[in-house]
Amino acid sequence: MGQENKISNNNREFLLSALKSGTRVDGRGIYDYRTLRIEFGETSGTVYTYLGNTKVLVKISSQVVRPYVDRPTEGIVQFNTEIATLASPVFDAGKPTQMEVNISRTIEKVFHRNRVVDTESLCILANRKVWNIRVDVHFLDYDGNMLDAACIGIVAALKTFKRPDVTVDGEEAIIHSILDKPPVPLSINYAPICVTFGFFEDGEYMILDPGSLEEQVQTASLTMALNNQSEVCTINKAGGIPLSLDQVLRCIKIATAKIEEIHSIINEAVASQKK
Amino acid sequence: MAQVKSHKIVLPGEQVSDLFENNQNEESNNSEVICLGPGLLQTGDQIQAINSGVLRHIPKTNKYWVQGNKRKYTPATGEPVIGVITAKHAEGYRVDIGSAHQATLPLLAFEGATKRNKPNLSIGALIYAKVSIANKDMDPEIECYNSDTGKSEGFGELKNGFTIRASLGFCHRLLTSDTPILSIIGQYLPFEVAIGLNGHIWVNAGEESHKKTVMIGNAIENAEHLNHNECQAMVKELMNRA
Image 1 (tube, helix red, strand yellow):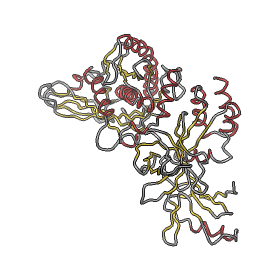
Image 2 (cartoon, helix red, strand yellow):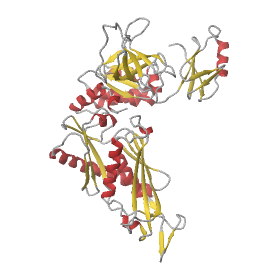
Image 3 (cartoon, one colour):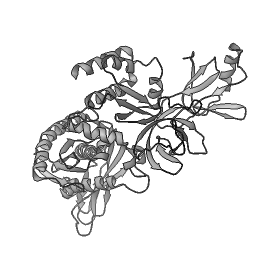
Image 4 (cartoon, one colour):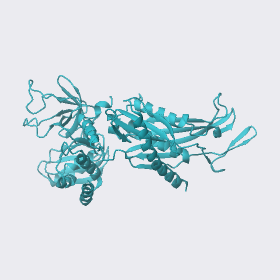
């Protein structure tokens, strides 16, 4: 069943007319982000992100593999995104929804193409052994804007994940157990954070961090990823109505302000984890 | 409301017949007939709990049911629900009430509806209805009137307003007199509310007051785990902020 017919006309009309008077259905301001909370699991690289009622689990694991033939000195970073049916009845088992495809594509774009993780540092022995870092993203509860929650979770997980240390002796590589030698963190170039905007009707009305109802009513959404220096790394707009340049510039301005808040929450959480 | 006795906590699969007998001795009238409500299942001579929760009992009518809390709705006869119309057929509407299968709403199950004079509801319309048939082998059926009197009794299409979601246990509690949140909000603001036992609550505080509707919705959502005094403080603070 499509998602469209699950919302009543009442809720759709209420949302739109409330938005015109500057009110959002959960009482937030138009450019308010929901409460963000980051929790760490027992093993390194396990992070639960809560964005309002949206809940995302990120888990990083590592493994030694043979490198790709065309990139003999680079490690491999893989992203796996999966929306479990338990997140919301909106998601059917089996066929991935458009939203799911969009989320995994954007995560790939933001983290992989921007070379967030320094893959050369993951090389153990050229042509023979490299680290394979696997990032699993599980969406546990859906209340809109899972992409931002996932990005925040991935950044927090990458910052706290530690892989076993390795010493290379000639042609031999020894992987030390965590008990023998302290594990080493990943080398990260920078941390991009996604901020998502929703647009309504012909783009006149714009909100930050859409909730699940807003996400289903909106006519377009725009996601931009900014790094710690507030440089735009990625802009993703999949379908919907066209937006003017002014609007995109305004989004960047708002995003720049929000990124600082989000970064400080992440850094605080990461610092408390390291203690 | 009749006197409700609360009993021990039961878990799915537990035999509860033993708990019944003690009470039958107390109440001699009606002891032969036992009425089983949601959460209980009869298999042969045995009665099993199929939900976790507190076993409740009204001695006067000898009704038993399990009061628990969950978020997934299973229809039960007589319960008021809020649903969204998803399709229209020759005989009736299909309505999404949040259960595993969509419910059927016959075209004639409205006040004053005849073969010539039928209601015209569009797809996506919100309706308040009562479950008339709930059977594990059939799709549930709902109706927008009391079939005994032929009157609508408040059921029908809900216009304007906004629906929020809440847990099923909380929706049950909102319908009893010992949950004060609705009357507390009523002291500050006039509003309309319809509570569906399928976890949907419809709120309307007038067409031009979106802020109030949102505020009332938030207040109800927040009140699930608050007692009387906390509710009063929470509503007061919300009203002051507005």
